[in-house]
Image: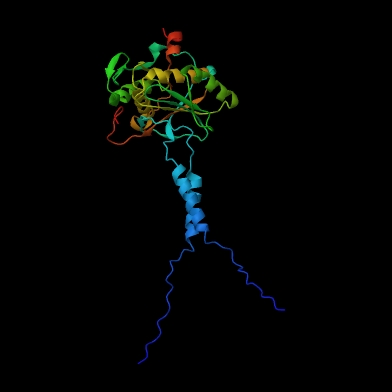
Length: 144
Length: 145
């Protein structure tokens, strides 16, 4: 009696590998979001390194609803803010700068002021080291 | 006259390298993928200074209408009442005192909502906040679209 031997294919079947790979690509393309994952950092004061700031010794930037600035109670354009700060920072490099936004001010205006201060090294060659953003609760507690 | 037999040409499209290319693309997506824990739709403020936000940072988002969502950085964000932000932040800081927080707020939201969140983070002894922003273009202004 004769037996026929079946021929066995000794190659690994890779024909569907590209299909699987492309399915995975489609999955990643659908789930990937090119989200904004950048922003401005702001270090919050810790108790041990947060002395009370004397209002008279600092620069107070008040942001009105609509984005108008009052710097030390005088109106000032955002573009001129760093020029105003430069001589003060040259005399005192750690001069406190307080940002105080009105409760109805749009958040974007506060961020643009903070962004302007962070650009000080590029624009006027001095870093604004001491930026403070007091909250309403802190203002009620400590403002005098 | 006898014509010469034409050489047989392979008519198939060579697909042998397709899998290699596909796997290269997969590796690219696997390396760059960033699962968003917070998908709140907001119009972010624009800034020149933009630093890379650390992965696994906790998220607090505020919509234009003042609705707040929070995420510890690994789970999908959930809506919370403004008064619960402090307990959320305190819980996150208790688990990891070095944890960074990301504030993802709409640029048009009234500042009092942001003030409340920052105050909660200060009370919870958070160390660093990242104010999420978009890249400023040359012509764009502070509060413009």
